[in-house]
Length: 193
Image 1 (cartoon, one colour):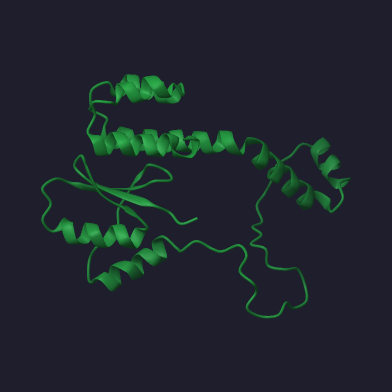
Image 2: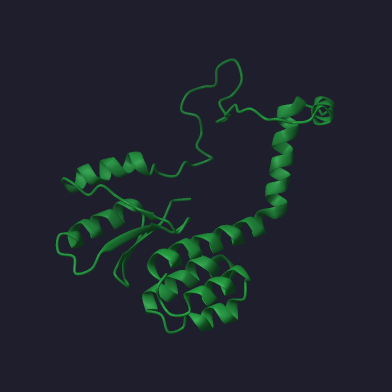
């Protein structure tokens, strides 16, 4: 999936979209700002700085290094496969387990690595919805605390957000500026419409 960014100028949403699109709009507006411009990554709700110096091509080239395009998982190999293990994007890291865990892993078909990958995949499937809800809530909170931290009912709205009390939450932020309110709701609840 492609990362989506949203730029706000004060309490007004300027643009949402891929990094390059957002950066170019902000670049055109930034030289005459009435209010500060903040760019947020929608997936995390955290603010991010883009280097907007130079021409459009230079800005886009720097962003390509900072925010690489999404990788297609179904991309066919460009050259025939050689001997040895396939390149699966495997990353080796240290795992600390108790001896009984290592013993159990050693008895699994395919060995410890295969068993661990299967366990992780199963856990991701089992808790996927809860993980997405937590990430959405955290993103909404990060955005909200940065841009709306001094708005009325912020503390109560935060409590309602973490309590997953959607009705109370939306009621508490109902009087907030429209663009801010709508973006918070989108971040927190868009995949649970």
